[in-house]
Amino acid sequence: MVDGGARQILNEKSLRGITDEKVVVIFGPSGMGKSLLSSRLAQDVKIDETDWVLHVDLMEKRKSLNLSISLDAIEQLAKLCDLKVGTFKFSLLENSVRNAKPCKLVVIFGGFDLVDVKCRQVVMTLALALSTTQ
Image 1 (cartoon, one colour):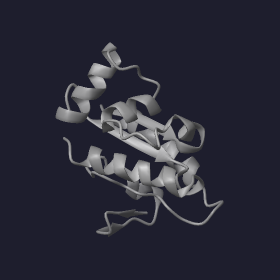
Image 2: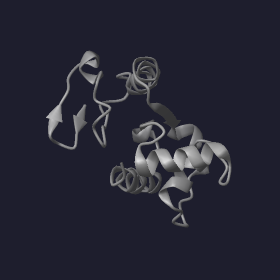
Image 3: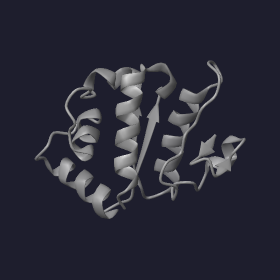
């Protein structure tokens, strides 16, 4: 696992407490358990921290990504998480992304290596946009 090219973490226990990082990438060869690891990380963060954790399985949601029109990053994330714009949950998401209030948001994208290049580009753009917020 590499975070921003700055640090390499070699085991699962090292993942705990990394939620202060802006972007974390889990990668490796096929069959190494990256998807299972990202799911478990999402569950563990939900249990251990008071953060709002969104786990997005990109293989499941790739058709929800708007590949041709550039939506606002928060709207794109909401669409991936099945949150409708204008709802209370969307307002919570928007405030959490922009201000880290009422809760800090942790987004975990699983299956990044399994989607096509265009989908990866959209996810990278989304991650970059989200990383510039609180």
